[in-house]
Structure formats: structure tokens, C-alpha cells
Image 1 (tube, rainbow over the protein chains, first blue to last red):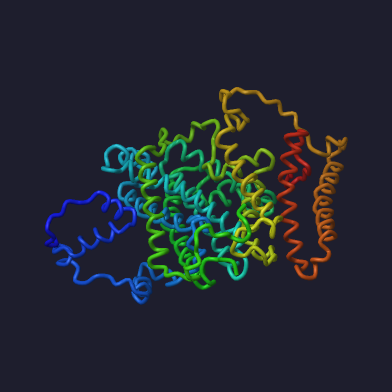
Image 2: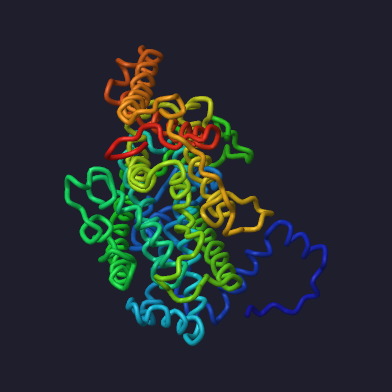
Length: 276
Length: 253
């Protein structure tokens, strides 16, 4: 601490400092000039334009950003922040999902009891499961809102047409990720929701056994679009395994690859859209 | 809708047009991330994810509902056969969304909120998203009970509710009684709807043909006619008890 002689604080003076905001810089000064701080950090951060650029350009996590951007693109009223929140929720599901994978076996005999084990015996298991599920639901909502915002601002217009197309793929994969995860608890809610959903596949024109023109292709209940999806004619253990692999490996890899392209194209197409 | 030209409330005279991402954007992202994670954590602490009894293939719950985000599609199963509601409609939605940038050639309203410069586009998207997608989902989650029957929030979900199935096919309602006659009648109605709709659109927009192009306009009007057709079919079913418009040996519409 500095060697100031103790002073009785003057209330009016103190209020002035708080109102003008000077109090913060004084507190910061007290802290950064203390012996503890200076012993840990060898030099300070000079807030120069060069350093501001370097913070972005020489940081592997931040360098996806441009170093400078238009003022209007900072406004929450313009972006709603929905794209970023969707990505953050995706990352949350990845982290919590990996933790859940340590305890969950996608096998007909075990899956439901692993869920019970997760909820009642695993430390923070219930919290991890809740965060995973709610983040997935929230992600569906935020990705729709992101799409709505992008439409309302006309941001799909040239030169950003192709990034909109990738975005539509990402919306679809978000729904598919959520849908494949829906089966994994292996309870009544899961099994019948997925039964309702996958029953649609058997009505696929040409490729589903109950779909139009199926007789010309020779689709049967055991050999059509639906059986390809669920590995049988009913939602059973093979469907559980298929959905598990799709949910944990196949769709996240594809969605992740598309996200890389999506973010890269924002930069290449001239940053976040704005009035020309 | 927000105004066309954003009128800044705060004084921005001194602020340059371009700002450094560090610190201005990064700190905003950081704040957003904190708020989101805290909200998610609180939500997860307060409300548990559902886990019902173990999966049982011999016990079908009534109603059986798809995940909530697909309930709009499940709801149009009332009005369409599964090949359309469950397969063709979702594919058309995805493809139609992807085609938007290539069909909407209006150069205005690129990168700012405006209603007046692109009224049609805003109306079509809002109708599709808010009515045909969101409203149907809300209806599917809260108002559809056993037997996929409609229940008001104050009504008891009676699994034995009897709803008379009095719907008839459109040709029958018009007095066509033979199978081949109905086949022909339905075909003419469906084909006529698309042909006349397309012709009227091309006539009204004939001046735009040169600048917009035939293929673009043709695809645009087909997608719009399908979207409007879904609404017409819903109205026909709810208001006039019409089941199918066109019955063929291979598919029914």
C-alpha cells in the first residue's frame, strides 16, 4: 500500500469522486500499484491503438474477429446477439454432453438406468443433464430468432446469399441434433416422440413403404427410409444406438464444420451487414 | 418494425465510424456470455429435465407428441397425409428458405431494418414464421390433447371425447359420385389452382419479367402457391369439412 498518512474522508469530496467516476480509477491505481500486484505482473497494459489490434490479431481464440468493425454492428438492437448466444449454447451442450457421455451407455438394457444413476448418484449429474437439455432447447429458440433477425435486416442479400444457405443448413442440423438427443433418455417421452417423428419417414415418396409410388421401388417396412433411420421396423435398441452415434459424433462434426464456414464467410463477405 | 434510418439517440458525433473490436465488441460478447451462462445455470438449478417411466413399446401414450419444435408439422398432419406433412413440407421449407436470397432480388433493405422498402418479403416471412410455424407449435403444445383433438386450456383432456368424422372429399361435396369423375375433378382443381395462380402472377408482374427473370418468378410463385395452399386446405377442413381435394390411387391431397 502507498504510504499516505491516514486521512479522514470528506463525505462531499467522496460523493463527488463517485459521481464523476474518478473513484474507479483511484481504486484501480491503488490495486495495480500495490506490492502484490506488481510482484505478479511485470508490466501493465498500455491502451494504445497498436495494442488493441494485437489483442485480436495475436490471440488464437479472438482472431476470428476483425480488428475493427462498424459502429452500428455493436448495437444489440441491431444484432440481438442471437448468433453469438446460439454458438455459446452449442459450446455449453458440447461441454455438458461430454460429461454425460462418461456415465451413459446407449444400450437398451442400460440407457434408462444410467439416466437414473446420473440423476440420483452422480455428483452434479442432474445439473449437467438439466444444462444439456435446456441449452439444447434454448439453442433451437435462439437459432430461430437469429434467422428472423437476419431476415428482417435483409442480411441474406448480396454478397451474403451463400452464408444464408449455410445458415439454413445449420438451423436444420440444430433441430436434428435436438431430435436425435431426444431419444437418448430412453423413457416413454423419448421413445414415443421419436416414434411419431420417424413414422413420417415411412411416408417418404418412393422410399418409404407407405409413401406414394413405393410399390414401384419395392420399399417394405423392413427395407425403406424409416428402417434405414432406426435400424428396424420399430424404435428399439438399434434406433437408440443409431441416434446416439448421430447425436454425439456425426451431426456435431458436420454442424461444427459448417459453423467454421459460417463464421469465416461473415468476415469474407465484409463483416456483419449494415447500411451501405 | 424499426424505422428505416436508425436515428441515434445518444450523441455519436465524436465516435468514429469504425471502432476497435478490442475492447468494444469483446467486452459486449463477454457480458452476453456471462448473462447467458448465469441464466442457463439458474434455469437448470430451478427446473429439472423431464424423465418419465422407462420406454415401453407396448404402452402408447395418448396423445403421442413429437418434440415441441416439430409440433407445427405434426399439426398439419390433420390436414395432409404424412408424405406431405412429414416429408415434402419440411423439405420444401428447407429448400424454400435456402432459395430466399436468390428469389428476392429487391436490392433495398440490405443491412438495416425496414418495413416500407420490402413490405411483401416481411409479410411473407412473418406469416410463415409466426403463424404457420410458431402459432401451430403453440397450438400443438397446449391445445392438442388425446386423439390429437382440440382442447381449450380450461377443458379436461378427455381421452374418450367423441368427434364425429363427417368430412367428405371436395369432388363429393360438389356432387361428383364416380371414382374416375372425382379423380378428374380433383386433378383439374389442383392443376387449375397452380396454373391460374401462376398466370395471374405473371400477368400482374409482367413488367418485372425482364429484370427478375422467368425461372426466378416461376419458382417464387410455386412456393407461394404451396404456402397459401396449405392455408386454404386448413380453412377448407375446419370451415367446410373437406378431407381431400384430389384422391388418386397413389397419393391424396
